[in-house]
Image (cartoon, rainbow, N blue to C red; front, side, top):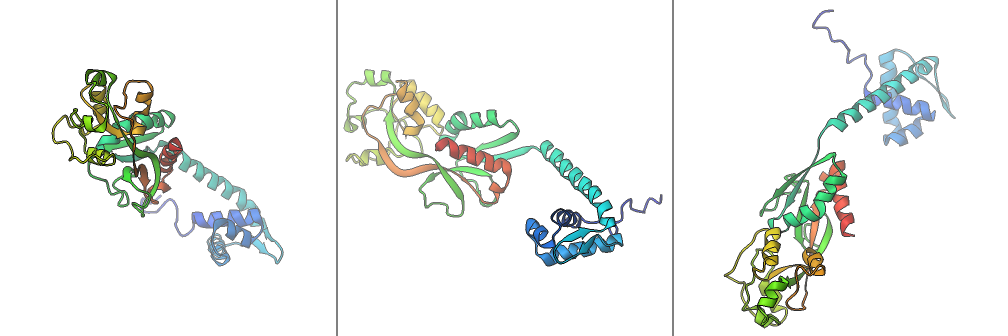
Length: 300
């Protein structure tokens, strides 16, 4: 064979849409029903069959008013076409199974480790076929622009109208410390006395807002340990280094186990929530929608 002669001729080998159209009409014995199944117009599906018959140089259907029947050539051709389409579908499935399924997840620093330990570890255990690429960054990734598939944001229901979002938990803030810290500082029993305590600092949840809601005006603390990660903040709190301000959802299990205690009985309902966000385009990927729906189900 001449090296320049192609093994298959593009002008003679039918296109996949032509074969799919032929198989659907043969199965339904009706052009209109086949067009509906394939979500194309009857004119479009008729054109595909005309192209196919022109390539093959034979008629494949007897076109009748009530029903469309295969010609003798069509009867011979049908099982071969079904075999080809089935083999192609199987080959695509095998290929997709070998392709790494990846989800790029952007998390803010303060809540990143909490989400990894409380949500994403379980997801990875239940979905070993999906690789998570987790980026913890203070700058928001452009989800709509494709910089991340999923992101975690704190805000209100009306925020980010161009994104698809689902709340993970409400941001209801409580102050907590270790039982040992409270025992060593028995003078802490009200918000006013807390102003003299060591308030552990972070960048997202406002001590000023928490005190102001109870009628105590103050500025954000300028002294004391500062943490950019909630896991380190909780560790410091458990080690009696001071009082932390965090969403109730972060610490309620530790409060239940008496590892942490609220020095005062007050909960600030901020009206904000932590949301999992994505774009409509990213959610078209099965692995992205699987993680999004899984996270949303954990919150329900």
